[in-house]
Length: 557
Image (cartoon, rainbow, N blue to C red; front, side, top):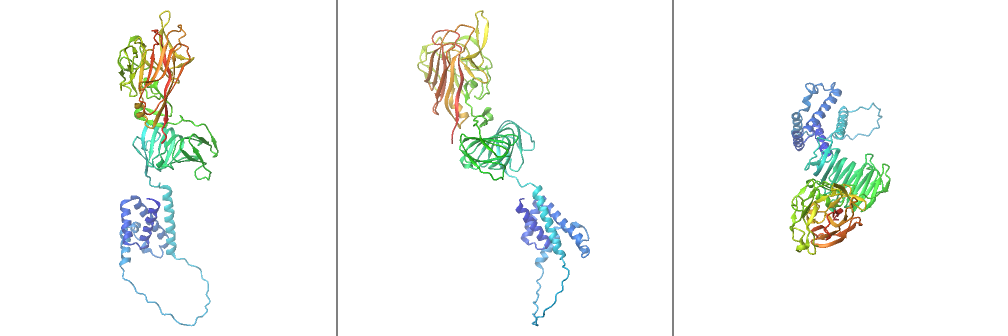
């Protein structure tokens, strides 16, 4: 019951005690007591208190009211009968006395000690006790809670509590206290319309369907226009959204960083309730708030927050670009692939290792079934005419004539292998311009000539429907091998839907890296990367694309 319902209940108790209860009030009280055990407890406590007070003060005057068991005072039937009698008793007519018209005499009034009506005193004491009882109830009995949000996705989440709903699909309540996310990431959708992604370790509390408290941890909020006004409180600041996407990071000492990515919001420094002048944050700004309420500018960190979560595809996106080499390693483009994994150009199979041997190519385009993001692979040879480069029959019209051979699979990073002068196998890292690639820090897509691979941009957009693919960027070159003299050349080709967007020919070892930057639109479907042998038939064409990424940008709604 809320405070208004509790007040009404005690008014009914008073009516019972005073014998003024009506039929409607009696029916209302009867319904309350029949449905609420807590109300029954209050009823008994109330009249026990009345009995105790009355017994202690009036036993000398009215002992017959105290005889017997105290529980008789709590018998609802007794009070009901008294109330009924009060209503049905015959009306007594009282005649007004005739006024005596006598001369007014001045009387001398002597002061006597003031007496207090005991019944009024007992009523006042009982009323005060009821007020105290009500205050204690409000203090120790929490207000009724209501569901305000739902957990809609989760990855590797571990919670400190076992008595709170924390599974995907569970509803969350206001006034349920702090929730402790020890590790992992969860996505919560508020009934008001806002969605937040919270990274552990974090402590937070849901206040209502449009307000929450973040005591520590990181949070990314997406607030549509219909949910404007969504509020995130921290120990020393308040962020009131005005239709934005923003990130909030709260340290364990309560200091707060706020990063505004789109739209705008109002930032109010200081503890909740303190009168502080707010300031407006716009897209591209970031502010830090200290415990003392001081605000200063900081650098916007675009990749500091998980802004997209999809447990079905192991996706935790922080705004970084999508790595095509990671896709070849069986990943989702954001670091889940394995370095050294490869795709066989003859079968399209993805394997944990890679083969190094001289093999002949075919004239067919081979689908890659195990990856929804890789359309297919092929061995390019334009000697027989246009080369198919997609499952939708896009072709490379001017593909150069090659020897139709390749020496290694298409590999996510890894090492290269060659024979030295003593015919001993030598494994070496991928190096371009004295910088090593093919590591977790700097990716590489190894494509020994002659090889080709096509990526399905539509499938990637389906994975991230609220993200735009704006460009493809990469470096290209031949890995430097100091154990052997430089030799051979490689041609690089980049196509979009079969149309050549970039070419670099006759690339040798130790040549400067080629820089690729191709703008992409939402209409572009297939991106194809090709390395051909340059027509010199040289075998050590260890060509690769360094840090091949799709540049991603969130759509602005």
